[in-house]
Length: 300
Image (tube, rainbow, N blue to C red; front, side):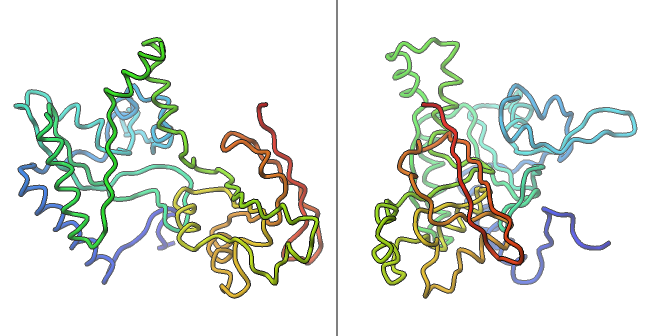
């Protein structure tokens, strides 16, 4: 078999040229700002790769292997853990960038692969000026690539002060920060339900159908959800697509093996996150779709 392994991809022709042009823009900008390039091994000791981040979802998805000496090894899943080794005995501030391949043994989708290119730029021992430099070069790169940038700034120190003011114990603060970081994010294998309040017309069929004009899901939103590797999509209208759209959302999701549940009711009674969904379809011979009873389990 000569086909690439599932989750891996060849790049050639225009696609490969475009990737190389982007790399050139990144490298030129990084070096103009005084960052030096580094290269690190793809294979590392598994213990070093895991580090202290055993609860990190990405760490649980590392590719593991053994060499002939029976040593437990792993493919790098990011660059940050290797920075610990690079920064030893370096004069501060230490400014480095790295562009290379990383690997994660995680579920795949149309635009999510198990090998992908990561780009890091870091300043170890940074001050305010260095932080501003990173923001400036990020803004410059985005504009050069034709992307309108929106830069959001996080302040760990401020968050720690808020937790202290709320009397969160110091030993619990790291876990609280991790939960805050997850809040509002769509985890892999989540089933996403779009609540539009359209189900309020459920008992009025004419108004519910509304000549097939109702809230739907955009193609951009569907592609975004696919990047998050969702398990499926539910909506409280007749369809995530409108009749005249050509059903692009159906095509995107179903071709990627995702589930679509339409005409959902009582979605307003669900919490924003955290419910468990059970779908009980009726087996209809020769049908392309089926009625389904949906049960949600959540803490009250």
